[in-house]
Image (cartoon, rainbow over all chains, first blue to last red; front, side, top):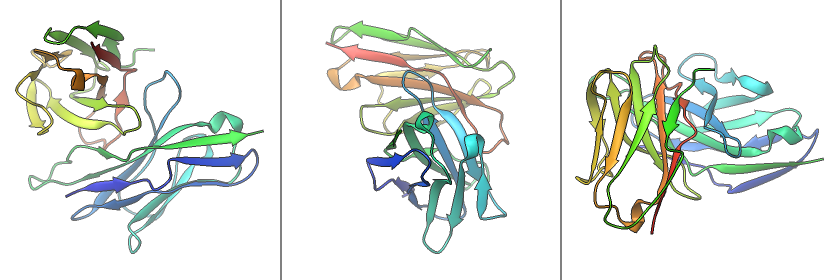
Length: 117
Length: 114
């Protein structure tokens, strides 16, 4: 079965410090991997995705993520955190189904990122 | 900004009543998805449409749940005989097929079943 794990319920970082939000996945075949962010009272917003190619993916707001096939991980990173980055972050995985089309997105439980001044 | 629009934003109902949620996707998007999210959990897939065809349904979608997208534009999600366990945020998203996984989400419709 396809699944996504976000092992940390909450990550606390001081402003200006680097941040990492962890994600591991389990999927048969080649995964499509995504990060979404949810600000309070706002809809989920797409941040970045890995489909194929370069293992380091750059996305919105200075975020990046590294695909590691051997560790089945797709951790979200940012070199210097901002207070405005405080939000709920979701990792998601999709895959090609037997018909060759993309299956639906499976989300992790989410990690609350808190950036303090 | 013509993003994904969901109505109503909040619905409080008594157990056993029927409720219907509406989703208006981004106009050029041919795919439309419904997800459910409960507190402390990530969104759980319910179903999705490509144009007016319902292509996939989750086992979470019991026979009390039905979704339609009659003209390939807006969609409705109906829950019949609501139960307290149906209380959740119902999320709609849309996308273009072929843009792998980049879904655009609405702000959700929160259902509270008393």
